[in-house]
Length: 276
Image 1 (cartoon, rainbow, N blue to C red):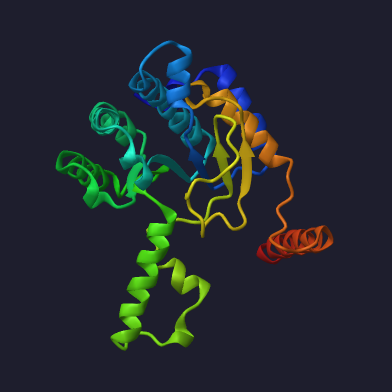
Image 2 (tube, rainbow, N blue to C red):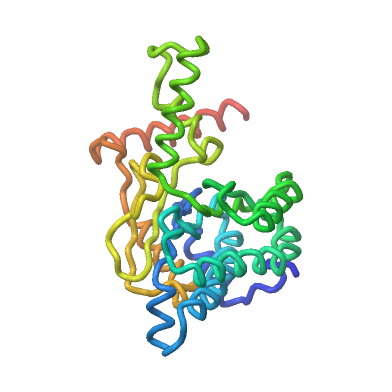
């Protein structure tokens, strides 16, 4: 099924409005929180909330792809989540497996690249295999990069990177003077993924829960009271319009940002004139 062909005129108009701002984030990261609370509100078990949360994943991936987002990273399962009741953990692993089996064909047809970050060797063998196969079959696609953070924790990733750098220093491949921000980033699980422009957290919680601690240094953060099963494309559009109204300064002043923007615009004008 082609998402472009199936898109409604109303949805297309909403996306065109957001695109007209010229501020589409290239990388959106989302902490998908609230499945359990949503299920409790319905008088259901927590796994019922996780199943409904998958519908939100499907809708957000579709919308993000259509609007031109390049990377979407979803915090699906943290290292700390292994401490949850075994029945819930096993159910989550099964839901992940079912999701990839059921959605793979559509994701692949719409040029989505399926990638994973995290301590994947902790996952059940069947889940490891389907994640590995999904990546191999989609790695050459040209569309949205869907990064699933599974058995992921940022402190684990940072410590892992430090250990690997230390081994390379001890082995003579590096000297301490070689260690820069860029080099450190290259040892992280997110080495080939740009830092998030926008982090979204659902459910009204105001924390980042050991998620992309290094990578979120200059990200814009959007909190919403919506529980994850309630978070669908219209909520994403609200977050994107809020993002478009912000000024990202990266430690600079507003006047410096404006001056840089003007210089960039002038350079583009001069390049056009030269080509003529």
